[in-house]
Length: 276
Ligand SMILES: [Zn+2]
Image (cartoon, rainbow, N blue to C red; front, side, top):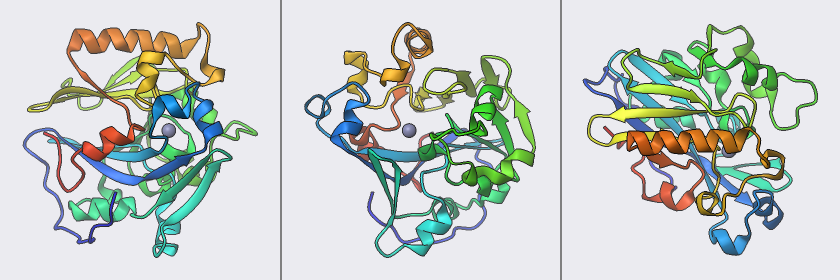
């Protein structure tokens, strides 16, 4: 998560085969009370910090931006010396040192040229730069769209996406949406964490199949402890989503990537490197 020099590359050409880029969009420092909100203890998880990853999927037919950070780039630029800080809620403090825009520029992409934008869900740590992608086609689940502009919703920040209300959009009504029509990039409904929470399944030529799990899990220990926030507990939707997707992962032989797992994140390749 160190700082790297920002060099704008020439405009990227469509790749011959599918690629996945992982960006460092910051880190969340979670308090003890914050960890316990996930129904795990600090002793059980060990490392309590969470990374904030952003992803670019580059397909021969277009690009998809998936999750867009926790602090808007303009605020990161204004506070670049020390890293931008923001409390996303009383138990989670974000620190961001690099803009998403600069990381995209480094590999030859500009937000204005991205074909599609989508989020796993609308919480603050996944949506900060949505307005940068107002010229992309937004792939949106109606339940999440409603949640995003619901009155008195403290879990979101509508100032992050004022321009999206009127941007070109496709409403995802079915459980699955095949973004490029060839089965390589498929969004799957996974409600529970939020009403329209979703995950992204990729079929990469060398890396194989993997699922970007959004916030279906937060800490990797959630998998073995069957932990989830209080408001998601019970025989409700998160449990059903986990069960269905767990069966899918086994059947497909796909890896699960837990976005907020910091040990996993630190071992990953980050842009300009990529997975293919
Ligand atoms: Zn999150």
